[in-house]
Each structure stands twice: as C-alpha cells, then as structure tokens.
Image 1 (cartoon, rainbow, N blue to C red):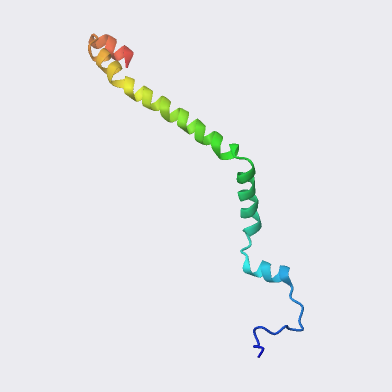
Image 2 (spheres, rainbow, N blue to C red):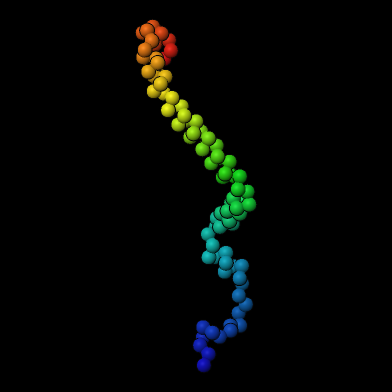
Length: 84
C-alpha cells in the first residue's frame, strides 16, 4: 500500500527556491567567511601569535617591576621624582 507521503507528485520541485527559503539571508556571507578561515589559517594564527608575544612581554615587564620600584625607593627624594 502506498501512503501519500511516499507518492510521487506531479509538481516539479524547485530545489534552489526551497533551499533559499530555509536559509537566512546572511548564510552565503557566513559560509564565505568560514571557508576563508579554513583555507587561510594565518588569518587567525598571526593575531594569536602576536597576542602571545605581547602577553609574554607584559609578564616579563611585570616581573621586573618590583626590582625597579625597590631601586627607585632607595634613591634620594629628588632623584626619585626625576626617575618617576
């Protein structure tokens, strides 16, 4: 027995129209951005590497800060103002 859902209809199915109705209007743009990120990994790897280098530099500078502060506090008050 054939159910109505399994039966072949006489109407041609417009696949592109059906697909465009179910997709949001920004789908093509988002897919293009996704493809660019997939093909060109340097788009996100270069900023991550730069951020990593800056973070390491900040940590080194922050680690040396107490030593410089202690050395400044041991100076005369006039030299302290000049150094700060």
